[in-house]
Length: 255
Image (cartoon, rainbow, N blue to C red; front, side):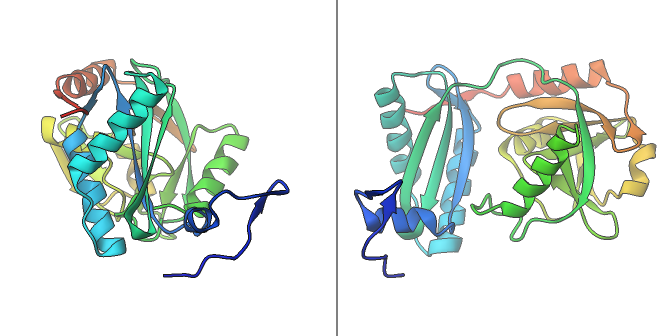
């Protein structure tokens, strides 16, 4: 374990708990993000499984789902909310932090325009902290007038968005890129509910797809363009995708 600094100040005032602050500042950890509605979460079990799996991989210890549920329920109660955007962060020593914020808007997401960048996240299967590269590229994309950055290899193979998964519609199946990526909970739920396949997708393949969409914990939205390649918004497809997601039974946070 890294020995924390003897003294830490924030804006000129001593930190109340330097050891805890040093743990939070080292950037080594993982998290998950979820939308809570009336105290319930779609895919809660998948969130808990991923948190435990990543904690075992990074810190060689388990993170019981029951403990996480208790911490989320406690944070929601303290915030006086049953609808919220919740994040669960796990740091060294399996220390767990829970944040509660305003819920994301429900309903269809606005169409998005993406720009491809040459970057893949390290250890992409983990929703890890310290994602400077993806944050940098997304910020650059937003400044350029896009809604999201699309992460690709130097050879143009597509993996994921900076904060999203991407799927393409070939007229029969949702095609999720098979390159290393974080398999988001929304992606997992939709893959189990709709005809889906994983296969390589490159920038050169884009004109061959009929539609595209992005998913994350906050939104399911159609993609109207990736740089110079345009996509029509397939309203029937988006309705099917949204209906499949809405049909997933939400699980109560409080057991």
